[in-house]
Image (cartoon, rainbow, N blue to C red; front, side, top):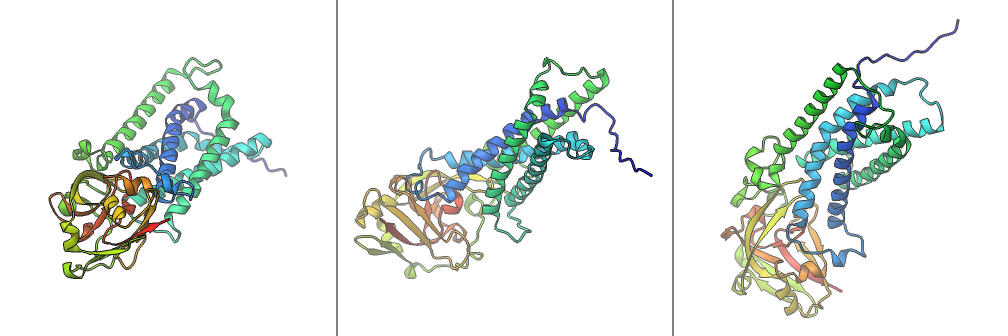
Length: 378
């Protein structure tokens, strides 16, 4: 007796190529924006050797914009991806599973694309809440899978190009005319997906685009909540830093002319005021008023060359990003300070008392808190 394998039958006109293409026209750009801004974030935090000395310090709001856009586009992509998967999932049951070499490439690209996209959006969303229920390091794995997804997306577009082209616009030749009810259902589906994208964006983007902070409903951070009106990711307790006594604090500036400053001596130096944002990789950001000593003045006193890089070392005992480095553009920028005050008051311990770094166009994790040492690098 010969067994006959049959695939399930899915009824309805919305599981079709035209609907999938319509959603893909939005999902594709969201992925591209998320990927490009993610690359910016990665290279700002982990620059290759050839790029490290010359990462630009202007515009001062640059990282705030790109990282806010990265998180916003990633969140907006979630309902788009769910709608896309709902539209195309019947094809997962197509039989036979492999009909030709081209079909095998298509199935491979879909498998990689779906698995990678779900992984990227899920882990990225959990990262915004700083929840890591997995055993691997988030940053390198998220970065590597982003390249995998991009490659799978390009392969998928190349393989499906004829069908995508045929269904790209309403007047494309060869497009089947749907029954009136199916056409109305498609419009309703696309409207619902658009409403979902708008809802998740408007209720989260205020964490970085502060004019919309009043609409925040789902974002894990509110830009106004925290000591001195500024959120905190790593507290002094979490970093293993207690209250640092004023009389015990010393700043070591290690260069050709090495010297040490007490906190009173730092306070006696010319103080400068700047308005700069803290912009964190989790997507939140907030501008604040800072005052302190310009790093360039400290470097010139130490005899540093104009093209010298600087290593900033924290007094914290544990945790990542205890040490950060700045290229000469950041180190010499007059907006880069060792800040002593925030929004008119002394730094809160959770904001890095007694001294922290604040620099333009720089990820929040590199705005080193509890600074104890500046090292001039050749």
